[in-house]
Image (cartoon, rainbow, N blue to C red; front, side, top):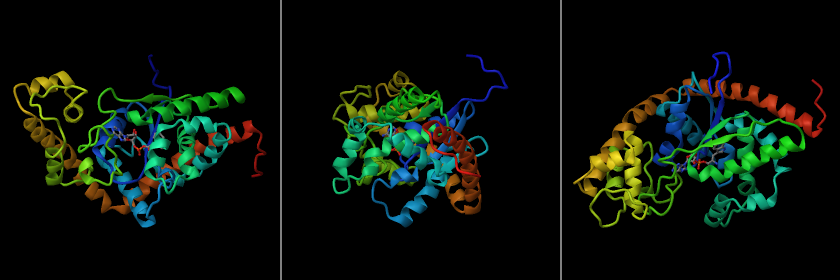
Length: 338
Ligand code: TYM
């Protein structure tokens, strides 16, 4: 499709929960793609703090983590001059639209969400209503901005499908209101696995530090974690789904280097797993070195960061208000007198 200069760019919306430590899985599955897409799209990237409340948080840590995550977005290459960066709770319309969408989403649909099942098994002392209706808030995040595309890792596919169903349902019940969004899931890197247990997805809030690489891990820690990553006892560097640990390391190397999988195999032909681990550690350290330097600089300049978040929230509120007032009108709520 040829887009004329005067046509607005399509909209991208994505977000990350400020829980645990931003990990290389989040970077390879989502953030890296955000950076690559931001020139061609009108982008909004959120720190979704309301979502993080579905799991118990230490308030002071959550507050600090929200700012830290925003700084990491920028340090990874999100340019605040091109993209809006905002904290979800600074835009009250998310929760407001979430409520309306709750009323057209069925319990049966939410019961099927695999992430709810996983998380409620992990936090069985706190299976709260927010955890259950979390995908509805996520749908609100996306639909509020009429997003065309949502770049996420594979684990969010089911939530995106629900978002599309809810958008279509609303459009059919009332009249066309929401853009029905598409997921953007990378072909390689959409599901980075845990380093110690490669049958499990890498999670930023894992209790075991050796399972993930934080974007802020120092070089010696990154090297140690990769060296200790679990693989089988083979030697040849060949991609095979059956050899999950090795396949994961090859995948990480592929996305970080920009080489496709056959090219990575060719690069390591005749070499052993140990070579792959050494080179992957070097590549990860070198990729994260400038990110960490920029992050340290940003965290020293809280006025700059606050300014970006204030501007981002202002921009988001303006857009969100438009969608929400349309929605309120269509469902029959009386407009407030101005
Ligand atoms: P969250 O915070 O768990 O993860 C943030 C992003 O990182 C991706 N991701 C991964 N990608 C590859 N390998 C992994 N091991 C891996 N782990 C996580 C996730 O797919 C995601 O893209 N519900 C969302 C946050 C959210 C959201 C939204 C996303 C709330 N509202 C609106 C997009 C649009 C979540 O919990 O992601």
